[in-house]
Structures are given as structure tokens and as C-alpha cells.
Image 1: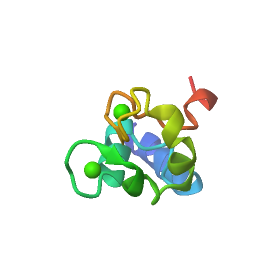
Image 2: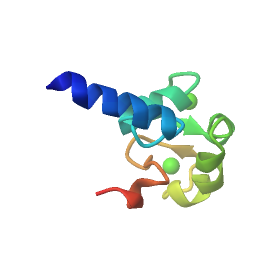
Image 3: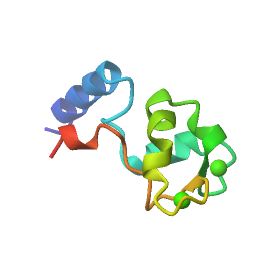
Image 4: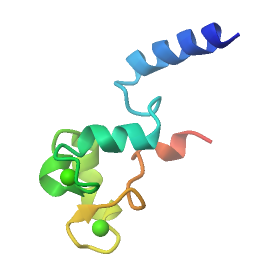
Length: 79
Ligand SMILES: [Ca+2]
Ligand SMILES: [Ca+2]
């Protein structure tokens, strides 16, 4: 019954502006415009939520988010 799950997923995807339905890795790649494996503050500006949380997510304060540091801001709502 994968089709049912995929349809539900597609609806959720559309309804949530592609934020939480997407695997973190896909989201990361989408934001990492120059594909260097980390998200700069400039790159984060394409996602207002991410931009807003950039400083909090950048745990080692090097000005970049690594996949390790990168978590969708809405994460808490799930699980
Ligand atoms: Ca980058
Ligand atoms: Ca960092």
C-alpha cells in the first residue's frame, strides 16, 4: 500500500511548504546552494525559518551549519 502512503505524503508535503515532510538530508541539500556540504548564513536566507534559527543551530559558531548541526526548526512538533 505504498501508493496510499505516498499520496498522503504528497499532500503533507504540499501543505507544509516542503518543510517537515522532507527528509533532513534533502532539505539540507536544497538550502546548500553551492553544494559545499555546509550552509552559510547567506544560504540560510532562502528559508526564513532557518535564517531565524541560524545562530541557535550553529552550535560551534563558525558561521556555517553542518549536517550535524542542521535540524529543521519544526522538529519538536513531530515524534
Ligand atoms: Ca554551502
Ligand atoms: Ca557550525
